[in-house]
Length: 181
Image 1 (cartoon, one colour):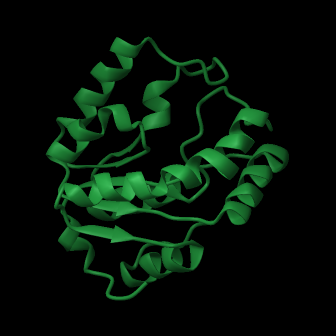
Image 2: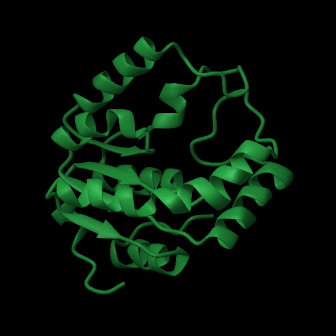
């Protein structure tokens, strides 16, 4: 990764997309603190708290999403590509995080086996190892990478793309963000 633009280039409404376990939630919190805007975790809008990841009714999720996107400033992390255009219409910048399968798998295993609090965690939910998530990390996400990149680039917004954790650490350094724990 070369030529990291100044953070100001991305504006005050930043969309962060990327695979599971790539660091989206942690980066969203750091950027939101720096920009003094809310960090919005789409997983928290999509799922009901204290239900162990039960989705909200679709219309409720869409209403919460629309409310978050309407704000003057935000850092929204998550994919939910069915609502992507609504976010892109208001976003001033995009960050697409990348990660390789093995590191993503390692971080997922650490999250589910190691437990403990993490950024973007749903209140009352327990991260458990499950076959659907393993398949998603190892097979589904890599297949969608090129599609996701093309959709985000087509928006014509200032965009930063990382290939892995080394690039992500560079963003923290260049933008003077507190490093993740």
